[in-house]
Length: 247
Image 1 (cartoon, rainbow, N blue to C red):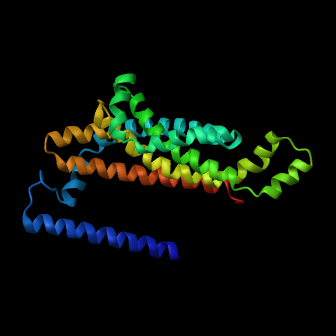
Image 2 (cartoon, rainbow, N blue to C red; image 1 turned 180 degrees about the horizontal axis):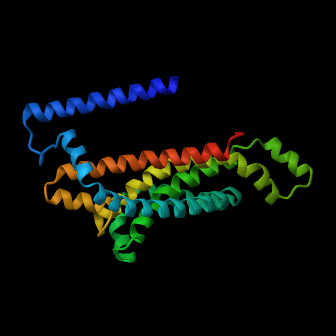
Image 3 (cartoon, rainbow, N blue to C red; image 1 turned 45 degrees about the horizontal axis):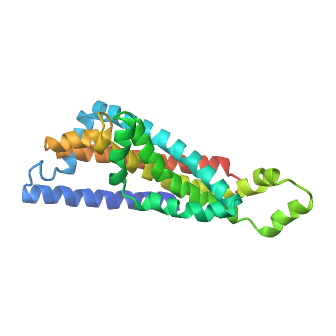
């Protein structure tokens, strides 16, 4: 009942903001190339649904590959930095630096290195994803109580079994927290990569529509990106609930 009330309140807030937006556009008679009304955006969304769906499928494929690649690298870095203490100090500046460098600065380099295909966007998305996954997974590995590990060590349990029996399961909630953040950020990274150089994808569609002053199509693409981000966040949360039922 509480969730239903929260959902209704969220719908009410969104409806109110859309109403204010519509009223402002109509009252000031703003042209569509300056600010389209929500009704015009939803109309464009319906008319261009097949076009938006095609470009969204490309962006979603880039995000999926980037999320998978970034998660694998993040897991590997998290495990290495946990077990190899000197490596933790050596990799920390690179971990932080990977997030300090603006995406717009590295996206053109990836285009030069990997061409105009799908892989530059995948690389940008993976670079953004790997930091939250690595940091959260490392925090999860370090969160285990020392006395529990000492108990297994006293029984002569090898470290590999301790990792799969205790450390890994204890770090899974932290891992999914990083994946939830990474899933939404990967969408941003893929879109930025498409802005820099692409022939398909929602980012490419937004650039083309903006050049033609079709802001209604730009907002329709933003709406699709929003729905994709919410969907990815929900899917990761669903996977967490299914895998960690006895959390």
